[in-house]
Amino acid sequence: MKVQNETRIPAGTYEIKLRQGSPMAKRYDAAYSCVDHSGMLWLKEVPNFSYVYLHVGNDDDDSSGCILVGCSAYLDIMGGGGTLGRSKDAYKALYKKVQPVILAGEKVFITIKNEGVK
Image 1 (cartoon, rainbow, N blue to C red):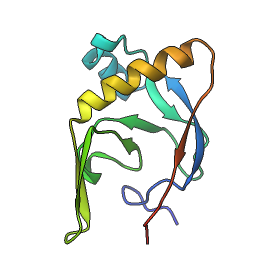
Image 2: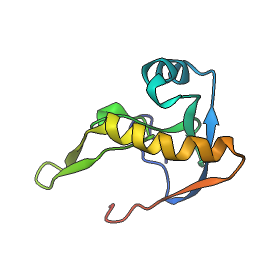
Image 3: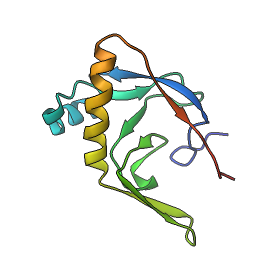
C-alpha cells in the first residue's frame, strides 16, 4: 500500500520524458540554466504515483518517492538510512546526457530495482 512520503516506487522499467511548466520544472529551469534545462526528467506510468522525477537530494527527506541522484553514497547499516553526495553534480551530468536524447525523439528508460529491500 502506498504511504505518502514513505513508500518507494515499485521495481520496474519506466520511460523518462520531459515535464515542462510545473513549479518544480520552473525552479530547476532557473537553477540549472547552465545545462540548458528544459523540463524535469519524469518517470511515466509509475503505478500508484504521479509526477515521479529524477532530481537532486541527499537523503529520503528530500523525496516523496522520486529518484535522487548522486556521485557517491553512504549507507548507514546501523541506522538504516544513508546519504548521497554531490547530488547537484550528478544531476547536471545525467541531464546533459538524457535531455538531448529525449529532445531528439528517442525513447529513454530507467530500470528500478528494489534489491535488498524488506
